[in-house]
Image 1 (cartoon, rainbow, N blue to C red):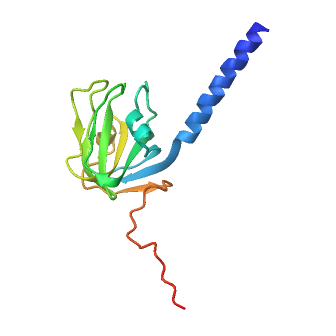
Image 2 (image 1 turned 90 degrees about the vertical axis):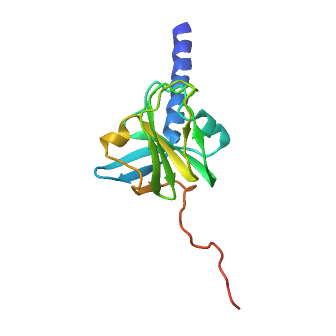
Image 3 (image 1 turned 30 degrees about the horizontal axis):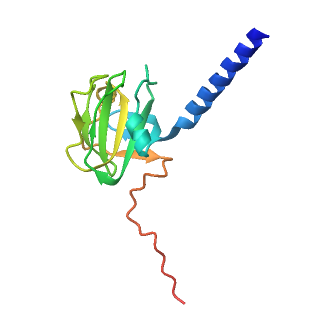
Amino acid sequence: MKKASIFLILSFLLCIQAADSAKAIEGLIKFSGKKDATIFLEVADTPEEKQKGLMNRPSLKKDRGMVFIFRPPSSVTFWMKDTLIPLDMIFIKEGTIVKIVKNTEPNQTHILYSSDEIITEVVEVNGGFADEFEIKAGDKITFENIAQIDYSKKSKLMIVEN
């Protein structure tokens, strides 16, 4: 009976973790550099999600990352507190990469990584990604299936005449 109880508890915890992981991937980003690449993204758009980011993760799958959304657009600064793996930080303004910080130093707070200008998103991926796929500032990107990201300049106002 005791073994069955422990098994049920462990099964329950694994199901919760699997459900949490399954809902985490919300969209993707396509890079069109010299080598095309696609990364599946978790979205961080609340203050709590932005603060937690990729902290305390011992690894990140090669095709995974996180997008931090800034509305209104802002100048931002990141650190690597409790982040256990090196990351590439890709700073984006309305679909164009404006800066890349490569292979950030894990688990420290003495180095700060700034956007240096107003941006709309930051994408964090495994360190070395930008070099591997030859991604650079000035490259265009495309987000898909992320409702919070819409660069269209079209007005949402409709005028109806009687």
